[in-house]
Structure formats: C-alpha cells, structure tokens
Length: 288
Image 1 (cartoon, rainbow, N blue to C red):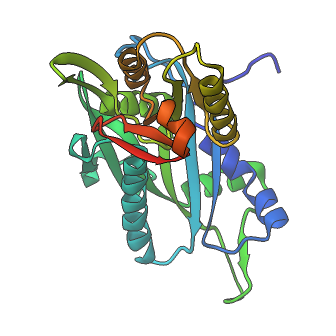
Image 2 (spheres, rainbow, N blue to C red):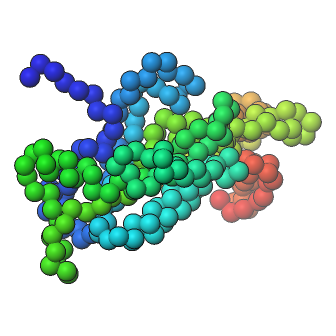
C-alpha cells in the first residue's frame, strides 16, 4: 500500500475503462478512445532538448476493431495514412518525414505490426509517431488479472469477443519540437537577412498583427483599434504601434504570425487596408 508506480504510457487507463466508456457512450465497434496525459520513462541520459525526457505529455488513441483475421491490415494502413496527413495539416514538412515499418523480428511480443513515422530532427532521423496493431493483448491481460469480463457484445452478429486495437501514439513535446524545426527558416528580404517561423496558420500562436501607420493621428488609431477589436474576437492578434512598419513586420515574422494588416491614410478614405503575407511578403489592398 506504500508503493506507487509512474505509468509509462497513457494507454492502460483506456483499457481499464473500456467497459465503462462503451456502456456510457453506446458506441459500436469500430470506435476509438483518445487520451492525453503525463507519462514517465526511465531515461538514464535525457538529451536532445524536448525529444527525450523522463516525463512528457503523451497522446494515444485505442481504436477498437473486430478480431477478424485480415481486416486489421487495412485498418492499420488507413491509420498510418491518416496520421501522416494529420502531421501535414500542422505544417510539418513532408520531405522531413518518413515511414519505417518494423521488421517482424523487431516487433513487441504482443504486436502484429508497427510503423513509425519518423522526422529529420537537427540531431538525426528519429521517431515522431508510432502506429501499432496490438491485437487484444491488453484487454486480455486486464480481464485475466481482474477477473472481470471486458468482452464486447456485437448486436449485429450476436457474438461476444475482445476487440483488437490499432494504436496511434505520439509525444506532445517531440511533436512541438518537430513543428518548430519545420517552421524555422532564414532568408533575405530587400537585401536584409530575416529569421522567420513559417507556422501553419492553424498552429501559429499569433494569427494577425494590426498596425496603424502612425500613432499621432487619432482617427487612424481609432480605425485600427476598431478593426483589431473585431479580429481578436476570433483570432489571437497583436496591436503594435511601436517603430517603423518594416520593424513591426520583422517582429511578427520572428514569432510566425501569418498575416499583418496596416491601416494608413487611404483606409480613412476608402475603408481598405494593406494585408501582408508572411511567407511571400506580398501585400494586397482589401476592404477592412
């Protein structure tokens, strides 16, 4: 009673709660349960910044499927494709990703198959996300040791069985590191070097910067402030009045802001503003 254990993965909490989740959600196989939480590893030498640590946030899905002989192979392929495409939606560069199926003699004893999606970090190609077909090993172990049935009753086939699972798993910390590494760029604009984070707009911490051209004109400030108040209702935005416009653009580039909006004197006449794209630095006029 005085001993406690730090969990090495979040998956087992899903398996122990399988019966309860199924009963309350009334989902039918196939269905999935997702969980995020703290996990711990016995790392003797933590290294590579966020990549390998003793404690980290882990995201896992247990996707429960029927225990058919061959259907898991198709489900496995579909999950590998889905995970790959999901990483791309976060702005991770596809040329830095690779798929590495585990050979049969390198699989965990309970696994039917496992594929790692790896990423080319500055310190080398390393695992980013793993997708494994774990069979029904975990549910079987929990059922045997608890003495309580975890079987699923299939209304359509009138069968009882322990579902098999496909498990995508990823560490939030190393995912964050991969997003940062994908986004970091250096280039030259108008003869000046520029450090830029090319975050995908969906993950950029700041989505829009709003700049009044000058701050000593009340009508210009009022127009810009009203526009900013509307934008920030939906997007995390910054209102910046300090320094030349070029310097303000650079500050936004460095934190990965996708778009900057400048309010100038023409805005007071025709209601248009200048919208600048972070990646191309192109500027267009459009209605505010």
